[in-house]
Amino acid sequence: MERYETFEYDVLVVGAGGSGLRAAIAAMEQGARVGMVSKSLLGKAHTVMAEGGVAAALGNVRPEDNWKVHFRDTLKGGGMLNNWKMVQNYAQEAPERVLELERWGAVFDRTPDGRINQRNFGGHFFPRLAHVGDRTGLEMIRTLQDQAVKMGVNVHMETTITRLLQEGSAVNGAFGFDRRSGKFLAFKAKAIVIATGGLGRIYKITSNSWECTGDGFALASMVGADLIDMEFIQFHPTGMIWPTGVMGILVTEGVRGEGGVLKNNQGKRFMFDNVPDRYKGEFAETEEEADRWLEGDREARRPPELLTRDVVARAIRMEVNEGRGSPHGGAYLDIASRRSADYIKKKLPSMYHQFMKLANLDITKEPMEVGPTSHYMMGGIKVDPDSQATTVPGLFAAGEVAGGLHGANRLGGNSLSDLLVFGRRAGLAAAEFASKKSSWSSLDDSEIAQCLSEALAPFSRAQGENPFAIMQDLRNSMQKNAGIMRVEDELNEQLDIIRKLKVRAHNAAAAGGREYNPGWHTALDLPLMLEVAEAVVLAAAARKESRGGHARLDYPEPDPAFATVNHLVRRKQGVLAVETAPLPVMPGELKEIADAKGAVS
Image 1 (cartoon, rainbow, N blue to C red):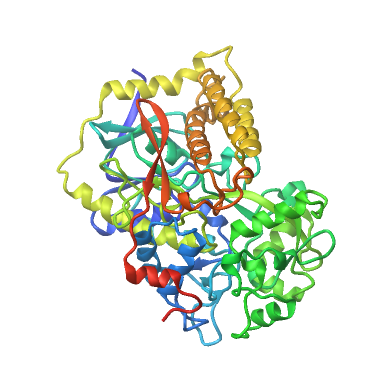
Image 2: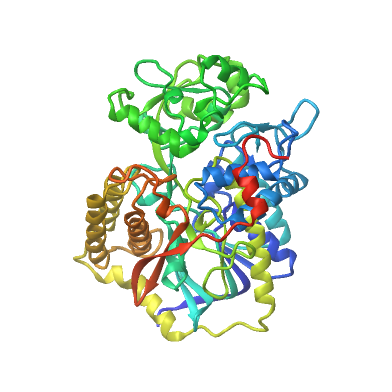
């Protein structure tokens, strides 16, 4: 048998972003020995790309804000498909998690009287996003990383997990490899936390970095964990679409929160014409009222550019489809004519500097050309709302890879506080689970042998296929057939494409050695990417309506029959299948909060 090195941890955290780091900290606080696997370098997590802020009802700008309003906004934004208990836990705990970050050294922007400042964001009734300019995610990672390293976390950087290992139905370890040396690694673990982030790289146009290939969803599914709400993928409305050097890079929602407006090729602010009925009365109907709101008039209503992301993304797509789009298939986001250059550079420094450096585009002088880009997965691994436990014993999940909090659509800023609240809960629960085991289970030699065989197989296929070509075909076809607008025929076509790509992936070849070999890495990514792509398409085909981030051209309206069910994707006898599950029943007192209009006391 090929040689491999073995490590033993009470809790193994797979993923080193915000949720993974917060889980590791929580587990170590309970005395657990924690190992962390990072596909990239520590500090390079995709969390750093979250720019606008972290949502929490601190009430620093508007004292009327509280957890109940945040609870209502999150449920309403999610089309009421969220797990209500998860939303309650989240809204109630988010303020303390932000204050905890501050105690650990995070430096937030301040109000004139010295409190953490909060900005406006789409879907939030009050200014709620605590922020550090437009680089909040970077500050979060810096703070959490310093805390975890200080506590003694063991980090395996540039390491990819290819399989979770099991004893009976429970997980007892993981298998992977060091991307630098090609050496194989096995991890014994009493509990495992999956915190691997999103799946945006299964699409051609995405804001996600190279690591976001959906590993965690697939790893969990392959050992029997349920996936939930996999049809709901958020296409962020304002990703750069031109120049090509910045294509896919997000323009933070903070640009609109600071006064930026969306215009079509006729110079019209089209979002005033795109306010859904459910939001009538909550958003300004004139530019004058919208401007008054931005200047702090508490009697005025919010600008329609601050509608939820699904609404804004579809409005941009409609402008393009009807011939009013920008030259490269999007819309114009203009803050240059709305705010002074000094204001933009102070409030949005990263936006200004990155586009100047990467594209020679001065956002203080000219509008940006933006359009929808694959950004965030609302669904994920089904978890218990209190412990983050999956349906597989010993396996927990947190962050973007876990489903339930966001329902059909995520509000901007909710992702960063999601990482803090549920990363902590997952770490605490995993440590408690691990504490009940006196020793590690022995790893099954035959299971390890199978993992080694699968990992080495690409080197034995001298006449096999190019893995990069297979990945490109997957990403192009997902963009075309399962992107922002979907229809039955194209979803069925995509399922057929995925079946054929699985055969091709089984024949993916790698040449050369195992050290720093991206062809080999891609060949091993493909089975996981295809697993998660199939789950997305199956769930999208099953939901025959449009709701939140899931839009069907052949079923353009919400259907009451789907308003109270989640879709689960389960692996049975080696095949993925979709089942429906009723939404948990919300208690009456919380239903009153969810249905309330305006502020909630």
